[in-house]
Length: 428
Ligand SMILES: [Mn+2]
Image (cartoon, rainbow, N blue to C red; front, side, top):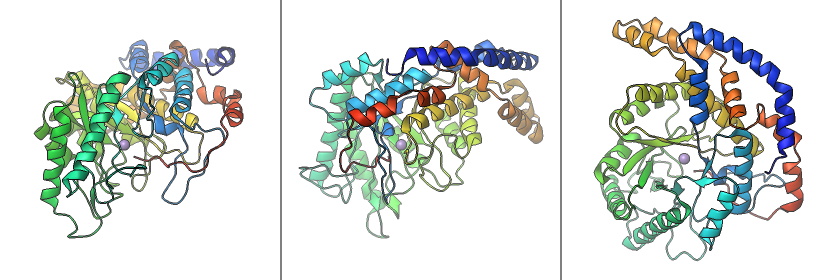
């Protein structure tokens, strides 16, 4: 255990009387509304969200990165920090690696290291948006959609290597996000670029092992600032549908124009049977990669409202993969990941207490205000005791950030992890 279990127990013992009192009160309130609180706690407890290995390092912007003393310097140390998030919060048992950032020669040793920390591996992310040292061809003008077949072949090979590594790590999915696009009108032939993408993806798709999925992650803009090949959910859906049943769409909340109705995209992809999963984060202006729930918790709730609706309707094959994808520039990433996990759990709990029968009646009878009231009421309920109880029952901390701050974890790491020069920013 990376954080002294005594410290957790001590803090929990102190906070339990207040939590149990709040929980009882909330339970009575929910019971009057026809909701059994224990069922909601069980659902929140069963919910897990993956964390990205790059999320535990300090992020950065185009301008700078301000590394935090004691931050992890390699995948083994990144896994340790991920394990702290899991030990305190108990909702993040899997990590999503990024290749080649997390590459090591001994993949088996990496898997064992993760297992020893109580962690498993989620989707493997390929990286063809930057050049690596010694790489034969540059991705400056694209990767899977590049005009030169040799560049495309190199990008395909990298994705196949990611699958091979993923198989050794126990992963069952590959996430593909490409930065390919254009910065100038006329620079790229739109149709030919998309054709080349599909051609490349078909070769990757053909090598997917049994039981695997490939998630196609779309993004409106950046680094291509005029046109991006896989810019929106419509293009993503078309590609996933063209590729076959193992290909699904991944929704990164920050990868849309600021006013886009993301929950409606979620509903559409559910209806079309192509919702593969999420990268949760929050934003105010663009792909800000801020902490989930930091800016607009209502939007996260509305996304979960669609997810629970799909679950209640038992939509065939509905099993999205959940992950956080954030850039922690000014906080301790461990604290941000703990808080963001709680924000997702809170949205889930609120979506679970929506009176769906009443909502269906309001929708069928065109009671616009009544429908809106039902959603608003759910978000006004303080579900914190449910989230805290779920964490406590799972062996975590009632107040994980306070326990973390009371520990000497980061302070110890400042000594044992002397800073290295350079380092990457890690935003995808
Ligand atoms: Mn993402």
